[in-house]
Every structure is written in structure tokens, then in C-alpha cells.
Length: 149
Ligand code: RB5
Image (cartoon, rainbow, N blue to C red; front, side, top):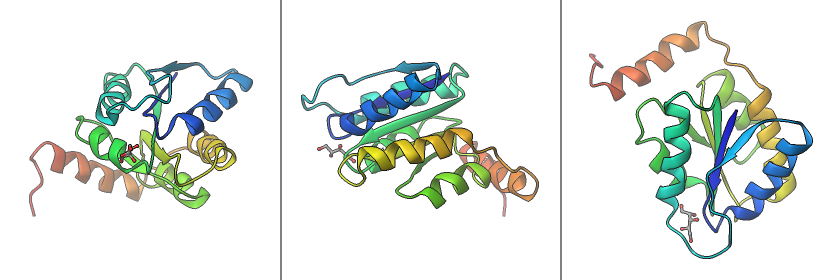
């Protein structure tokens, strides 16, 4: 299950990604927003992040104007590793190396076709583990106040 959400600045690319999910029979939970009326992005970022952090979705996608605001908000939720992606390389590497569990994109930065491409890469790329495991665990240690250097 994929958790997905957006604000008014990201609704165009979110809808394109939802079409892709439907076409590919991928289950999703759309946390809104559902119109282009102006809304506050932290609300939607939080709903998606909470769903992923609680284990109710495997991965999440959140869209706003730049992808930045929703990533900042999502990363405040314990257990979330949200990455803003604007190109294919980053969408792949943030799964392979960072084990990102949420990808954030900007509807004022990339078009619908690019958003769908990045979503398909993000959702289909596994975490490599190995040496990256230790580094991702260090991020968790920082989050838990257990990082000792
Ligand atoms: C909304 O105008 C805009 O600020 C928002 O979509 C996002 O880009 C924030 O980071």
C-alpha cells in the first residue's frame, strides 16, 4: 500500500501519479487535498508520514509546489526518511542508499510525466543494505538522541 498526499501546489502531479498507481493495480490511500483551493501543506505531509511511520503503508509520496515544505514536515515524524527528488538518479539512489520511505516532489518544479517516471523508479527500487545499513541506522540514532561521536 502506498500513502499519497499533496497540497494545492502539487495536486497536478499527485493526480498523474494516482493515475499511474491505478493503471498498475497498486493499492493506495489518498490523504488529499482534493482541489486546487489553497491549503496548508504540513497537514497533508503529516497524514502521509503518520501512515508510513505507523506501518500502514510501505512507502509514501507527497507533492507540494517545490516538494521542500512537505519533506521538512514529513521528516519531523519519527521513523520517516523523506527525500525531495527532481530527477531519476536521485529517485533511484534515495531508495538504494538512504532507504527513503517517502519521496517528495514539486508540481512547480517538474511536470506530470516526470513525476510519474520518478514515482515508478522510487516504488520499484530496493534498498541495497550492506554498508548503507550502518549509515541509515546512524540517522535513526540522531533521531533518537543516541548519536555519540
Ligand atoms: C504553496 O504555495 C507552497 O508554498 C507549497 O506548495 C510548497 O511549495 C512549500 O514548500
